Length: 406
Image (cartoon, rainbow, N blue to C red; front, side, top):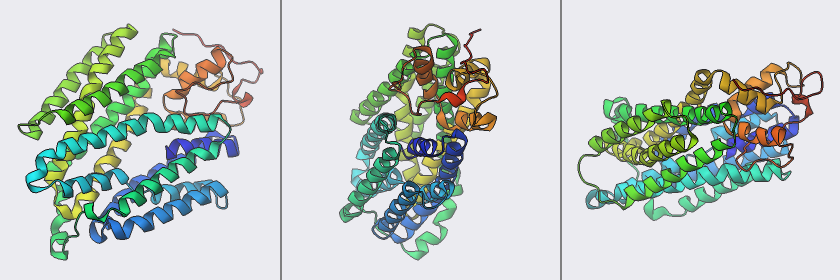
């Protein structure tokens, strides 16, 4: 939510996607670098001490961004550097609360966590986009900050469920466990899942645009995300037995086999059904990854370990999007032409802006832009996460360049 909100806000303020991409990139890099360090402080000093300071700093950074009292890039970096990883903090609490004889309930708790994350991933970008489309570009950043601060304070006041602090002797050698193969396997899996998510988003968009029906992409994403929720709920309700590592290997093999038909099918119904089947197993992999991370590292570095896993999954998603764009070739260029209103070199933002927009906007603008340019509608598509393009994205001749599909 925060990243998309920054895109809306900075673009509305500057009129440039290059500036929006630069600020969003600074936010993402700062989040990736500072997130594990905040987790390390939490493991050392406890959530009760670190979380209020992190939330206060994050609220102050968001205020700087909204007030424009400092350069947007500086404010975006500060927002990312102070963003607490609430999902990692929550996972650490579940691990401490459901230990010993209650450890059998841990997969169910992580399934509940996966369901909550799935709902937020579906609803969050839509809410931010609706606010931006309604003419309130700063409201999305403010809403995201309010949810982070409110949720963080709700965690901070619940001291009964906080993980207990560890001694200095236990912390001294605990960091080395983050280099052991048991933990690195889970990090590699998270990175691979991120690549899968990113490549799937771009490839589905390129597929829909290449067929001349870009609106189909929204339905395909909807099928995949809905079965994600169903798969997480079903796994949480199931009585778990056997080795988590074997179940994870079986789930990874199932996801691989279920995704292979996507290279063969061309009909939208067959592609949607395949994505729906593949979506069922994704939350299972995420749940089992949390279970195995919890068992692979000591309590002294648990929050840091959960943070690393989630951060590398995000980075893998970004890499997957870039790889998907290269693999899609001409079809992704068609999506760009939908998005930019033509293939000319004109426009105030120039080629650098289009490259930045391609990095930060993802798949949804292709769907929305078709609604704007193909149907001449001023109302953004509900699946859009990016504001409307203005006349500066037209060619030198003043006319939008038509799109031809190959």
